[in-house]
Length: 533
Image (cartoon, rainbow, N blue to C red):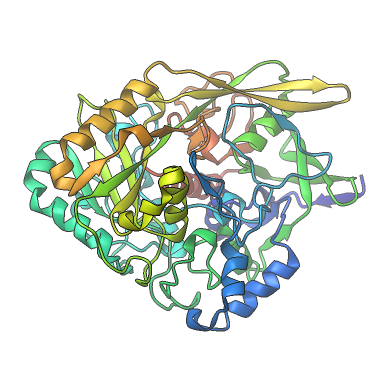
């Protein structure tokens, strides 16, 4: 081996995404030595230099060329908004030559080998799950509560106490509050007028809860409302787990090893052995430690685990939260939406729990006007695009999510390819998906008065499985795990020193946002595993 690290009391965390950093934070808090192994792809140096330069100035002093450079990669068309980029770069989804070892068509799931994983490009939504939606989980909210709070302390979640509190505790005492745009204020006012009726119908609504720094803090300046959220925040106000990696480097018990592709692992006595390669040189690497925590993301995690088990041609079932989109056209126009200073991530969360719609909570995120939404509208109108100005200030985009029981799935199967292997991804249908989405649309049409407008069913899009990136459950936690299942500490059947801590171990995927609960569960596992012998 070209590189050997023999630290038998070291705990190795594989992956730098939200799950990996939450687990690492918990381990460090228990006094454990932590080494993080990561492929670590990053933004191109020239783009990073531009971002740093822009961050030294207020948005009013950015040039048109600079603004275009950090957002022009966002593509909108008749079929909706394309894959979100950061600063007009696809590095968050980019593969590595010789290591692009997953294949398949018909899914929207893209693994990430970047430092910070998919938190480079996420929407930052942070809402816990309801116990009613995790009935098949062996871990409930009472157990996760202190870990939600711990995550909130370093992820800086902006939120406000409102109607969402009935179902979703804030898990923080004095949250920062982001200023809401006029379009969102008008919609919330409409909803408030019929609050009692909507609550009786199983609706809850409020301002979005997102991991965005609203005010200046030791981590940096607060949101400037520059409207460029969808392309990335030059001030680092949108939380990225890479920021936590950077902060953990100040702890002498923590080390970061980039450029590492983990291939497989095995247990030997009281240690775990991790084998991989340096992707720059293809030199073999070997690490030996006390425990390993697999947080590589659901696709790489499945591949590493199946390869370690030599479990070829045996599929894992990846559960997904079905993602759909449709526009809401409001009766009244909100003026100045093109120039108003506000943030362009989701501004309103709307939750529906109504048995005739779904047996589980349906989660809706509402996005107000932005340049990218305006572009999508113009493209969708085709030859009638001259009508687009009439829609300014009246169009809101609704992103919807279903529970995994009503969503399609993806099979993940490790296949041999000569001396190498690859993970085959194949979408699987669920006959309940389309009827469930249509029931949600019907409920929104029924409540048009409360919404102050009407949704447009002809423009409904039900996207491919995995497109939400709210996927997991391939190695679910069970009280008494069997093959291809894990225990309450994320340890797969017949393993004692390997803990899987990303979304792979969630038994089901509720509609409400996934990252907050993944981080809380990873923090819980890290806290408990740190004290094991």
